[in-house]
Image 1: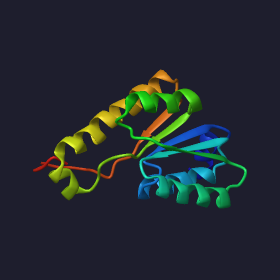
Image 2: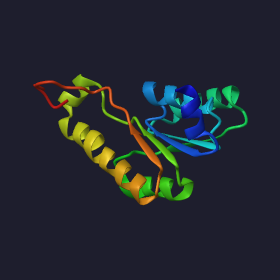
Image 3: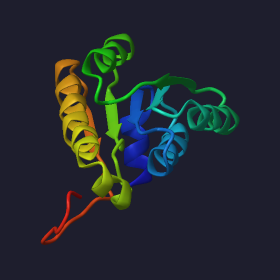
Length: 147
């Protein structure tokens, strides 16, 4: 499976939303080992992205790494990222995952988790991305709250 993933990512531009978070940063690190041409690490926290950038430059110095401090809810700004980088592969990990925070701010949770995802999916389709992988750690069976 690792070899197949390497064939898919090798030489491509890979965009990872939520790239500064726990899941997204790990995907950035694993993707870097597959030798894509470029990794675009997108997230809201500039400090986290800086840490990921430094890690990736050490792990895979031959891979171009770009960080973009953006919010997936801001469609026009996100469209700029897709337009400039034209990602072949998109990993969408950006989400409001903290249950207490989401319960306290349901409108924000919905806009990040729903509208942000719609934006990423529509822009990936519009930019002819080959693949979009949606990762979510939010699962619900008989949900009782906003999550």
